[in-house]
Length: 259
Image 1 (tube, rainbow, N blue to C red):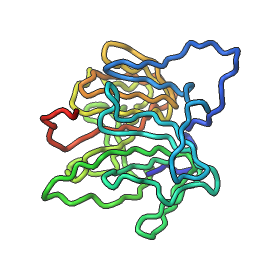
Image 2 (cartoon, rainbow, N blue to C red):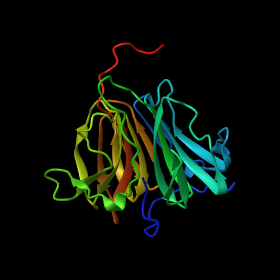
Image 3 (cartoon, rainbow, N blue to C red):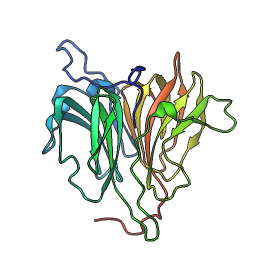
Image 4 (cartoon, helix red, strand yellow):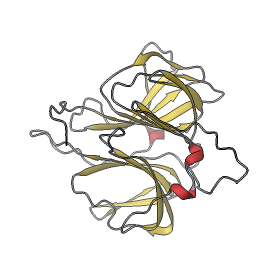
């Protein structure tokens, strides 16, 4: 998945370090119900590296961890020209979504090359939950500019979702979508439901309700929401507020906690 590189509107971190004169005050928060990782924390000092990846660094913004994300991990990958990997995924049970925000990336799948746009991209990973009687979903190579957003009912176009897969296709156990609010658009009630959420703000700014708190967020910020964490938002403008959304879907609830 990716955006049209002629648009170039999506925020991607570039690293670096803040000056020694900068105040420590920031919006970073880590709670039992939610986490906010603001764009100002994406510095050189918090990057990571992976085996078998050349000329590549990444920011890990979510990982399965006690008191944090449970069902997925999410990276922001930065690959230099000529870099990459021929052993990208080492977990045979993992499924993944790549969302390109900048540069040029080529993905080779079953000896077929697919050209995507840009050298910074999100990599969302999840252990696939296979179900007997359901086939594995086929790989998809899509561009969000070619997909008509689904307008939410009774919103007069102020709130829409770009869906990359059919929500009724139960082969998929996660959805990664783009949610768009026009200036002044809202989630006018506290959503409280079973899906775990990861939200990376692609464009714009908003005030987002997380559990009992209203938090200001802008392009480049990441939010993690635990299942059942109440959420709502108000898009502040002047432009659209858009975020890349992960959620786990379409599976029975596990009745035994992992130990």
